[in-house]
Length: 295
Length: 293
Image (cartoon, rainbow over all chains, first blue to last red; front, side):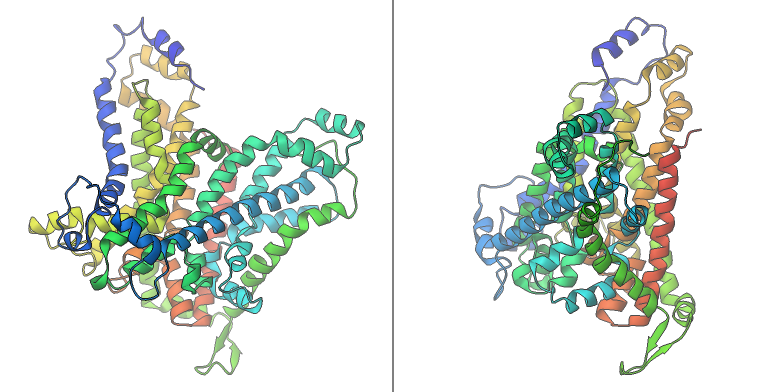
């Protein structure tokens, strides 16, 4: 943590003699430019979602929104508005469920395996560790077809299980928890054992509470990861009833000539709202978890 | 690192690793093995007979003009995305690290795009650069530039690079800022007393001390550009126009899922696996060693 007061105090007396700092307004200018660079695309979409498809199509959308949320009412039940389109509430439900299942699944599975690897010695331990590590090098993208065949063989195509189960093995989370567990002082473990706590009791009553900040930080990262999945749902869920919202937007664009752009814009706003809100609300934990866990 | 205190248990540790190991074996290791196997096989046109062809799928790929084109696209794409996303993030991080008013607010306003999906970033950029409905796309056309990324390959590449880099700036910003904050103030102040100006301090002290972060981010950004930008390309250009924005990942998808060319798609998968492995190994070496000049 940097101490602002101390820093300025140390710099203040020397200010006269030191080479001149760039004035603050340069910093403000650069940073405001950055904020605009990030906010502008979202602002345009937000504004567009309050206008009708025709004015967007003519490119006549101003930079100020109007008080009209009818687009949202339409997409909530009708989605793209075409025949048999998936309603946006269902897409949001699918995305939310998928993100939560992947998040909890990954955390649970990695805590268990990291616990075994950090606190037990058993034949095959290092082999298992390396097998788990290997998954880092095998993202879905590099094994599309054979993974699809396994999924088809297990009848997991077009199911929520298929969307989530294969994604819950995570080397990153396991490595992170292993690090956290290795840093737990031996005295704590001794004390627990002296009090007669078995391994599972220790895991539940001591280890998990002690690592709760790490779990919270990881939860944010994994929720975003789950919500933002694209290639995987595209592969294993062709059923429109299982469309996530990210997939749903791109499908809505489909053939451009008949696209209701205001609907696409409204859906985009709804697609980015939940993960952005979570990152902002949990900002401090999330930043710490990201930079301390390396990835 | 090893623990001194351990728990006893014969069956328990196996039960604890079982869930992860099962998922890993069924959905990662087995398919990866299948991909390696299929990369040495070739099916006839009717899918009846399968023949072992050694490295023919690979040599066919390397001789294929289209494959080399998509490899070249990937290189250009990855270099541009990495350079843009890291350069811009470093600029913002250096200024956000200064003691100025509202710096907390600036940081918050720079972090949130981390949460945006690559495909959603692509959709946002459609509304900026679409030739008819995009804010800047229309401006360009009104100014007499023939702007249409659906027809012009170079323009298409520019838009997918911009959208992909835009999404990644926040991630880099978070890491650069953390790296800057871990540099001891005393070092910078000592240089200041010695009369080094801001740019010189940055060039000779700050930037070299940031090198562990920089190396780590280079690997992460290249991996991101190569593997996580499928959504950007699929939503924006679908690899087109022609094959102008077809990267290696996009080509694996097209050849495997759309064209159902198993042998070739598997050989491409195996090549990509090798790429990820090399990148992961470099990353872990650097992270372990913490490079310093």
